[in-house]
Image (cartoon, rainbow, N blue to C red):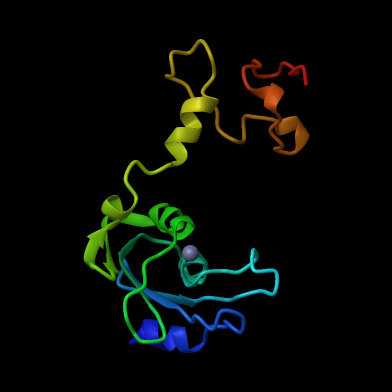
Length: 161
Ligand SMILES: [Zn+2]
C-alpha cells in the first residue's frame, strides 16, 4: 500500500507521529507524500504537502481519491490547512478515507475559499464585474508585483501608492 510505504519514510523525530498520504489522480497516476518535521515545528510539512508537490511536479491533474495513514496503518484526518491544500487540486467529489469513513472534499471543507474569491475582490471597479484583471495586467511595469494602490487604476495609469 503506497500510503503505508510513504508513512514508513516520514521524518518525524519530534512528534514520532509518522503520516503517509497517497492519492489517485484523474489520469490514473498515483502520487504520495510523507510528513517532514522541523525543529521549529511551524515549518513542518504534512504528508499532504508532499503529495500535492509530487502531483504538481509530475504533471498536475486532479485528485480523485486520497488516503492518509498513521503508523498503525489507520486513516488519518487531514488538518485544516491540508483540507484547503487538497481542495485546490481536487476533482469534484474527491473521496477521502477519513477515520469515520469515506467522505467527499465538499463534506470535510464546505464553502471552500478558491481563486474566485480572490477574483471577486480584485475585479476592476465600474465594470459590473464583467471584466477581471489578470495578474499579468496588474503591475506589469513593476515586474508583476501588485501593490494595494494598483487596484482600480486604469491600464497604463500609475497608481497612487
Ligand atoms: Zn496538514
